[in-house]
Image (spheres, rainbow, N blue to C red):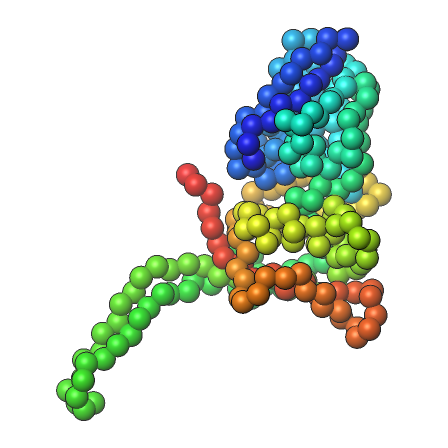
Length: 255
C-alpha cells in the first residue's frame, strides 16, 4: 500500500497524520506487517497525545478506541486506509468508532479448510525437472534430468460456505464475502495468509488473537487457465451453500 494521509482532530486540533507505505496485511501477528498496528501508531503521533487501540473483532469488524475523542477525515490521500479497515465514511468525534462494514481484505469462510497438502503444512514441494534421453537403443541411451526451481503448492477446499460469507447476491461486492475478497486480493495476486483454529463469532466484538503457530502462508493465487469468480453450488439450483476451491503457491514475504 502506498503511504496514506488522514486528517485527525483531537481537542479541536486538526492535524494531517501519515501512515508509512508498506506491503501490509489487514492484521498480522507481527505488528510490522499489520495495517491496524500502523494505523494505531499513526493516530498516536497526534500532538494531543491520545492513547489509541485499533483492533479486529471476532465479528470481523475493525474498531478504534481512544482515551480522547477523535475525528477522522480519510481524505483522498487516505482512501486506501479507509477501504482497508472497512470504513463507510468519515468518523465523527468520539472515543469509540466501529467500522461500517467488513474489510474487503479479510475473508472468514466460517468453515474449516480441506487442503491438498497435509493439514497445517505450508504445501507440497513441486520439482521443476526436465528429463531427456540420448539417441540409440535402450541399452546405450543416457537419461539426463535437469532440476530448476522448486516451489510449494497447496489448494484449499472450503465446503458448505453460507451465502453471507460467499456472495449475498447484491450488485455490490460486499466486504466479508468471498466475492469481494476474490476481487480485491485473490485475482490481483496479493499475498494473503491463513490463520487456522481462530475464533469467529458474529456476536462477539472481543479483539481476535492471531498466533504465529496458527498461521500458514503467505500465499498467492495459482490459477489454471481463465481467471473468473466461480459460483459453485453445493446443491444444484439452490443459492444457499457454496464450495470455494482456492489453489495457491507459497510466496514468502521478502526478508
